[in-house]
Length: 158
Image 1 (cartoon, rainbow, N blue to C red):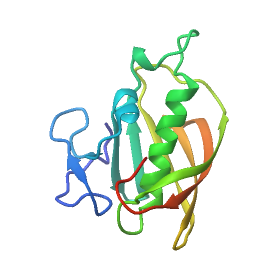
Image 2 (cartoon, rainbow, N blue to C red):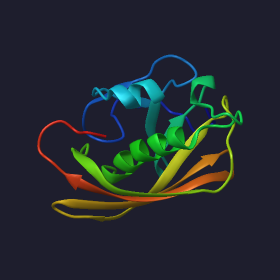
Image 3 (cartoon, one colour):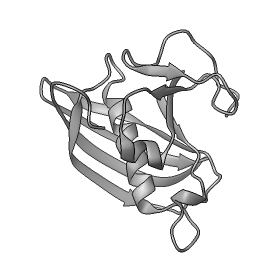
Image 4 (cartoon, helix red, strand yellow):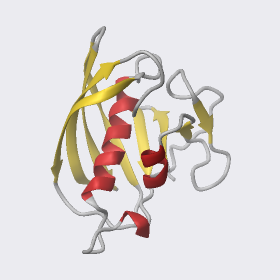
């Protein structure tokens, strides 16, 4: 997917991840949990590079709206996945639920274009994690987002 793709033996976050071995996602990781909506919307991928956590999504025709661009709901679902990956970037996979999510749609994206997500964990406490980030198509910003995750016990609901 880029010149910086590298295959590593360890997932970018400790937890339930499966490494992709087939092109075009070779070297990326996929969360191995079960999330029917996310599974139908994605697949979504994650890896770590020299700049930290990066998520990836290649929207398809199924992700398009009536204008032929990627539906805002698909972008928000990818942003939510990215929220959790960034939220766990300093340690273990986050088990929790999204309690707030703010999104600003900056520009349109087309199906078939690689989308990536990056951001920062603003604060990670015992019960709440605050994250902000951006979704890109190449160098162009498609969406900015921020959100709060409430840690829970049991399986993650991301």
